[in-house]
Image 1 (cartoon, helix red, strand yellow):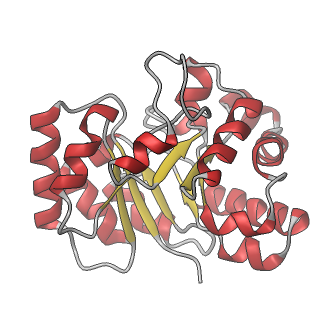
Image 2 (tube, helix red, strand yellow):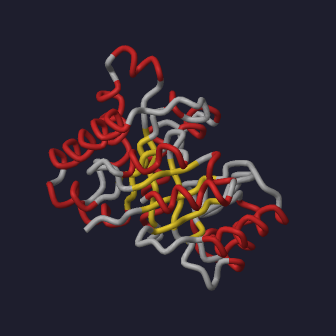
Length: 249
């Protein structure tokens, strides 16, 4: 049985005091839910967030990590560093990392392997650009991103994988894939995994939708049979909005 998950990616937002205030408000307002709730503050606030949420079911996850265990990688963070402060899940492959920091499939495959080798869980992001969608190449792009970064993994590794489909054209633009478009792609993703592995793995992996989910559209998107939750950006920075999205699942 795959998990329902709502995760908030805070990106480069919230200083230490603001992070503490938002976490306190979220913990106080968190609705009863069977879904896993996760938040990804910026690196400098991860340790504080773990301490703040010690008595909460909200999980703290990281926005990124390097593939090396240590070394001359100025400004980077390793899996061991995350684990040492109690962070056991990391987002990898976010469209902004791909676009702004030139992380390609080869780099992401190394990062995924590094995280799994340390028994971390990986929330792997992928999705097409607007031109891919307009040209009808979106299925090929998604299949290629999955294949290049994940399909060399042993079948056993998939119990530590969460997928987050991000139509890049719907991130921070106010545009949203329709619930039908989201379902169509999520079903295609499961079919692709079934063909590469088997139906059991495809049926058990949680696939989140990440593309301008808001309280107004969350229930309809989450109601689709192959959509298991969301990776939420801007709306996760406002407690009431994020709580409403969590309630929608």
